[in-house]
Length: 269
Picture: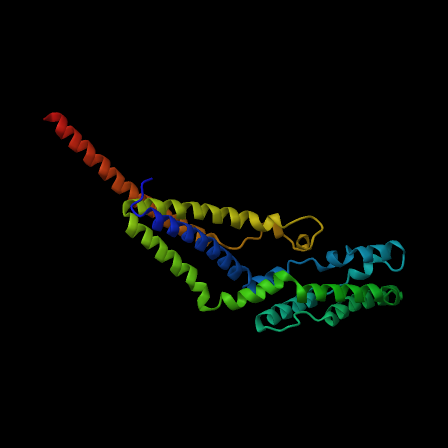
């Protein structure tokens, strides 16, 4: 394709593509760092299965130190409240997002309930595992890179910075069309159509690729069905790309028709 401003147009195309990729990253962060979204996902976490499948807990129960059933009485509603408090701490900028004592008390109540029901003394044997679990989970949450990324995103996506990629995309797209005229419409249409397809694939495949049986994410019910909720963005980009290509097609058809008319006129002479 012969460009009128090859260097400038190529530069703007590259910068536009980079900007759009960055935009998809920001929009994804904004959608998944939404407070309601995070709270709803915590409710999908299978805390009972997660506790019972820790290696050191399985070892203890296999060695008959205490029965695995002591964790069947974990209060899921209380866990959800602890999770909601942790989410609130992320948005309020607290350094410690999750206190280990709250997890300790959660598991202790489950064990106490089992002991009362079965006239047992499991708590004295499970105390070490209980403490280890609470410490490990709270440390992971308070220092996890994903959580730090969520903290960062709550600041960025709620500031003027979030609007910058949109403005840059508009400017670069406009410049490409201004410099290349009709070819600019074709270039813009192709870029936004391909970008919408990339977003669709990214939205429907990226999260499920994180799922590996036995890892942390596998304890979220329906995790493989989670998305970044990018459907609005890729729909808009697809429509924009389609409109630009449609306009270019109309111009191209007019050009072809005009050539045919001129050729037929010359032939008639």
